[in-house]
Length: 115
Image 1 (cartoon, one colour):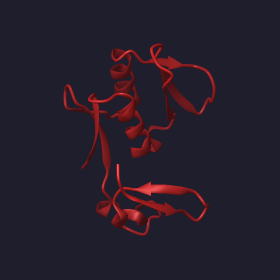
Image 2 (cartoon, rainbow, N blue to C red):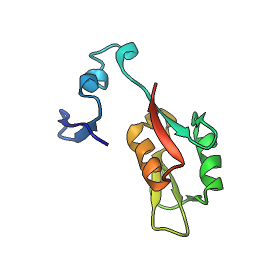
Image 3 (cartoon, rainbow, N blue to C red):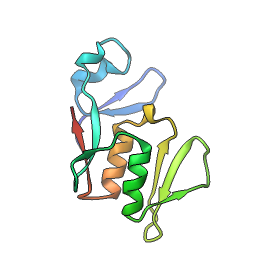
Image 4 (tube, rainbow, N blue to C red):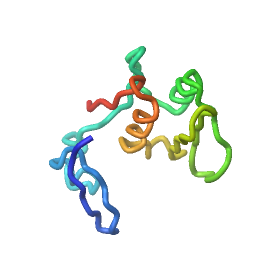
């Protein structure tokens, strides 16, 4: 992963992979000019389009729902590791940061693609 670290107005730092798209989040550029990222399940080439789809794939890989902690998150864990995948309950907030977390914890199974 490469990119540029950008400081937002609220003091939060964010990694921006394509610096030309820095203003997409602030609404200063049209939505059509902003690149969208999708999570792809490599064995089938399927684009993950919902949490229902993602949960089915993760279960097949040995991940289980974790019902502790924050109620605003969907969480998954594996008995064979200490990894925890935390996702916002609102799928509209599912962005590339969460996608890359899934990719790192499931090597050679998922890929993030720009469309």
